[in-house]
Image 1: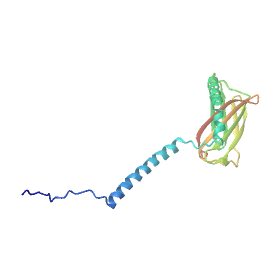
Image 2: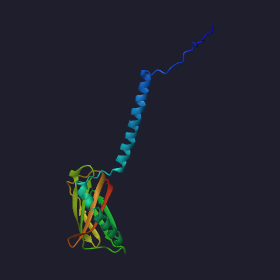
Image 3: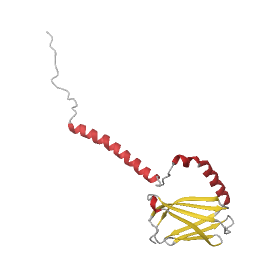
Image 4: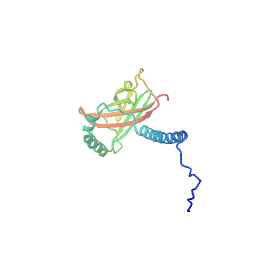
Length: 172
C-alpha cells in the first residue's frame, strides 16, 4: 500500500484586519488631501485677486488691448507713479526724456478684495509732465495689493492706458 504524505504545515494566509484597512484609508485620503493642498496653494499664489465683472465681455476686447499695448510700447513713454497717504504724484516723459504736457490723466485705485474702497482721481498738471492729486481725508486706505488703472486722454479719447497690481503701504 502506498501511503500519501500530507504536510502538516499550514501556509499562513494574509488576513485583512481593521488596522490594515485603517492604514489603507489614511494613505488614500492623505494623498488626496496633500494634492489638494498643493493645488490650492499654487492657485492662491497665481491668483492676483482681481475680479472682472463680466469675463465674457472683457475677452471681447482682448485683441484691441494687445494692439493698444503695442502702440504704447512704440511710444517709449516713461511713467513714474508714486502713491502714498498724502496723494498721487505722476511724472510722464517721452522717449527723449522730455515732459509730456496738456493731457487729461485719470487714476483708479481698486483694492483687490474690497470693492467698496475704490478711489478715483483726476490728476492736475502741476508743471509740464508732472501731474498730482491729493488723497481725500476720508479715503479708506488699506495696506495691501491694489489694482492701478491709469488713463491718459487726449482730445477726449483714450490715448494711453496703464494697469498694474502694486503693493501699497499707507502707514509710511
